[in-house]
Amino acid sequence: MKNRWKKTCIAALLVVCLCTLGGWSAPQRADAAPERFGDVALLSAHAAETISYTKKDDSVKNTTPNNVPKYQDRDGLSNACGAVAGAVIVGYYDKYAPDLIADWSSHFSSGKYRNQDATHVPAVIRQLYSDMRTNVDGKGVSESDFLNGMRLYAANRNYTASFDRVATSSQLDFNACKAAIDNKKVLVLFAHAGNVYKIKPDTQCDILDTVAASDSHIMVAYGYLQIKYYNVSGLFRTDTYLQVALTEDNSFMYYYKITPHNLLSAYAVNFL
Image (cartoon, rainbow, N blue to C red; front, side, top):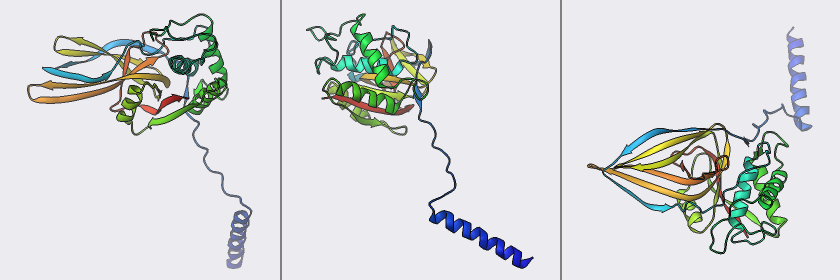
């Protein structure tokens, strides 16, 4: 019995050694599939909170309401969130990088953005939908699908699209976001399901209306707002937001609270 056990152990050791020498190892757990971004439902706004104050300071802001074009998918494309967000970015930079949209200008000579037309903007959305490989590997697009699709679209128009990371799942650099927006750049936010807000000023209070996105989605950030609230005892609250465009809603006047944030990642976008 003892000799049989000894032989078994030796055989097992030989198998381990031979497998190691041959490069074989036990199968590892596959990495989780990348998060994907597609169609989401926006749940109706409701008053979530009223912030009463004696004084507030909202001087840290850059919140021009019409600072991005307002585009939506009108072709009924499935999970077009990424393509529409990309088109908003393309339309924004068409002001600074001419001919990103062929044979059409996204803005008037005054600098104000034009309304979406019936031909050129839908063509941009359809092209980005293809360039981002929408629905190829699953619902909608992954982060890499989106970024690579934007790079491909830019390269085909003799531009270079690049992305400077300003947030990870654990940290957001507000100063980097602020600097990018002040330098006429927009941000792309890859967000988990969560809330955005409409801020309604009232007498000595702000009312926050909440709109909830039902699933992971992509937003374009083009402004920022920081509000410091004071009462008789002094500063009691500071709220910091990015002003964002939700491609599912043409009002484009939402604020995303960054402390704490619920982002997978975020980037400042460059077109050169």
